[in-house]
Image (cartoon, rainbow, N blue to C red):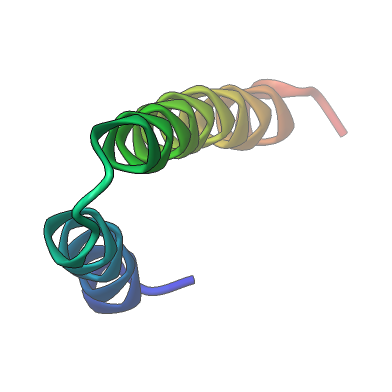
Length: 59
């Protein structure tokens, strides 16, 4: 997934949260966004480690 698409998704989360009048719904949307950001960072780190391991593995 491209960085631009990820930025668009974060904006969609913010847009959804801002449109809701219910504070509980806003909280849940922000919590889901935070979880998605954390998972994105963790998966990117794992992907980077995998790339390093593949590149440094002897053939």
